[in-house]
Length: 277
Ligand code: KIV
Image (cartoon, rainbow, N blue to C red; front, side):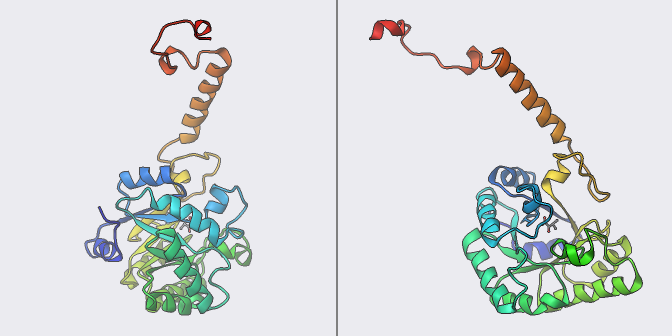
């Protein structure tokens, strides 16, 4: 089976079918989410926080996203794979952005790249698209600008701010992006952008009217129950399942209950080992 292409994803919007996107950072999770039938998998720079335990996504490097995307690519049979361009790999110039996007596509196995920003990254998007690289835009709450935003804050709450985000979304579409992530926006602002754009919008913390939704895999699986921003829904409570399983394993190792005969090997010959020497 081939990975979904940009044409397949366009058809989903045309047919009013919602697009399902989720993040993954390794082979095992990629296999699982692909088997579950998601349409798009994003190797987000959120790996800086989820995998590396950092405070934000800023220190993540191109090499690190390439490494994780290669692992994820091996696990996908049908989902479209998106490579998240980390901070510093596309802001210096449109040419720098193109060089790094080419490296991302050549080395990682991804079918498209994602970058944050609106009007200010339009030239970079144009160059990438001209080079044959499909681009996913990302506007609203853009985590790589965490310091400029004064924290991970919902954007577009005033009329002026909402108009700015709408202009950014239109600029990303005009530059040739095939899809747009809307993060941390009031529901009506995301709905207005979705209605105005021809390309599909994928929301995270942007309400129900987007053409699709994305969540971080560890959030939707409840692997860190202490992290529960308003927009996250836990579809499982894996933190509890894992703590319970690993706790039981630890106590069985300590009491000697594991491994028992069912989980140990026997020799073919029943002779006592001492007699073999
Ligand atoms: O890095 C990431 O995981 C993202 C999504 C949350 C959209 O950008």
